[in-house]
Length: 89
Image (cartoon, rainbow, N blue to C red):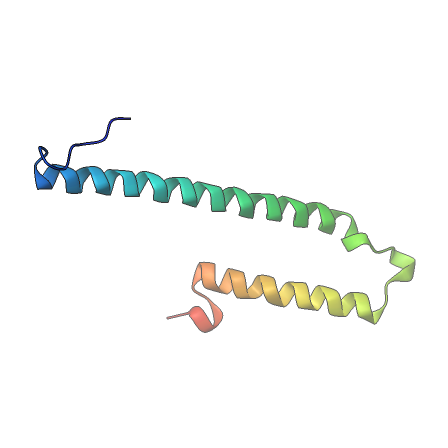
């Protein structure tokens, strides 16, 4: 990658190059965060498939409370993502 000389390069060209680099950095950061979310969702899906590490004969109200807590946190996320609940317009 070559850098533009700020003394000999027109100002509009410098701004365009800075905007291009900024856009590339934003895309890389976005894709990194998306990968983190995808990994978390996959882990949650696997945990759910395993009944959140509980056994049917041993489920108690504490387990229900834990799932209620998880569901509440996920609802906050989905409400924000889909414009629902307190995020509805």
